[in-house]
Figure 1 (cartoon, rainbow over the protein chains, first blue to last red):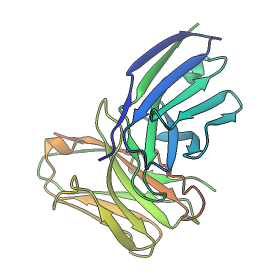
Figure 2 (figure 1 turned 90 degrees about the vertical axis):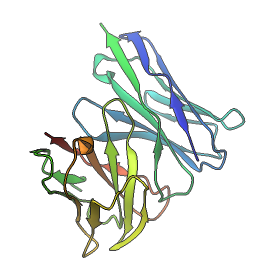
Figure 3 (figure 1 turned 180 degrees about the vertical axis):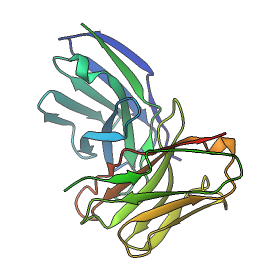
Figure 4 (figure 1 turned 180 degrees about the horizontal axis):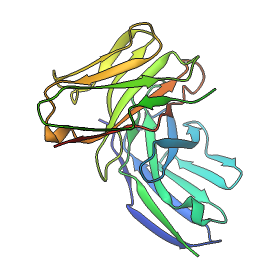
Length: 111
Length: 114
């Protein structure tokens, strides 16, 4: 079945860019998502990208998708302390079915 | 649009007791999902509903777990004879069956089984 992997930790300084990486195994994935989770809270949808796109930009967020390498990245420009959280990459094989999540990347932003 | 709500937010119970959680999806969303998240892991899918029909169940959903969505609106997840291994965050999500069918999550119910 589908497997999604992420690096576990990333530490950056306030104002720098953060890049969080994710790899997935099933080339049939139709949509790929980025969610943010703050301590003790549910998941907040940040952005998603359809599998036929290479890039999507939304304010400070840029998503890059390399289908050949099954690699997804999330770039956060001008990272702020409020961006400190766990970021989850998720894929779905068919819209409306179960999301497959990675283990999450903990982003720590220092001032 | 008030978002997905879940109740209770926290539950502490003794091993062997039954617990029930409720999820209210975004009002026009006809798909509803349950996930479980343990410490240091991403959410894992349990089950989902299209309106009142339960369409898919994960192997994680043992026979002690049951979920319902009787009128196609709110849903309940019941765990019978709880075990310490059931301690986790239980997350509910909902989506519309059009377009990207993006899933929006509630705040979760944190269960601790003593």
